[in-house]
Length: 301
View 1 (cartoon, one colour):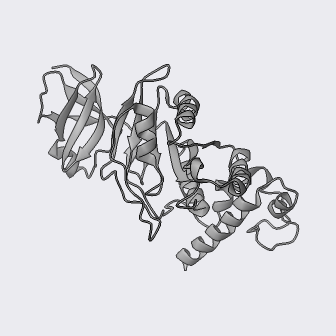
View 2: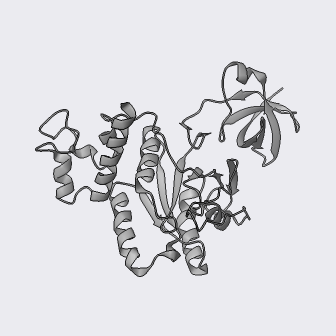
View 3: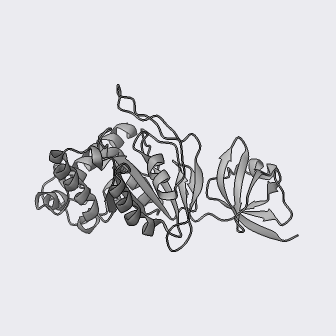
């Protein structure tokens, strides 16, 4: 019997929704062989399905993955779109850097979106744009958006759709930043959206299970991964020695310091510190680097 290829677009309680090439979605189970081999099917996995398989059947094999993300857990990702709020809650730039670094280590490109621009006061706009510019200069594509005002919604769609067309894009970020509202805007669905707690200014997780949703606009159909929010992030592959390499704007200056074991903190003739002083490397990103270096030092101890 011939096999077809499908993609896992959701997984709940041992059942997996598999999107077939003809557009149908079947709820299937993984064979016991995967459990014996200690393989966990992931969102985005490409699997083989028998031609005559029906609802409540099984998929047979997981094809080789081109990449894997740990949090959110997904495979075969073309890019991440990491969403933070520009205001309420205020963006946590060290957490953003941790996420970007982890994606860089796994070879996954990132787009950065700052939502809720409509909540920014005029005095805050210049500050946030300066910070956004520091990420653009580091090589990231950055968007400042709103999903409230109709004109801003139209502009947001026009800006983002071309980058999502024909790709599997995982949306990720802290709770309460408006990921589900943004997805509603982009695909025209009605995902549940949460109300932010006024007392603690943290979001309620409106997405409890990760899933892939189709986006039809653009030159080619794409898939958007809606995932539960996170408030912390653990970098599995990073050490104090490898951290500088994880900052793209640091890389041209690595190896140019006076000391070969330079940590770029207080050492003399440090090329990184000079680039910061000269305005080539953002002070915001450099401060994040110092905080992450301290975190890694603490974790090591």
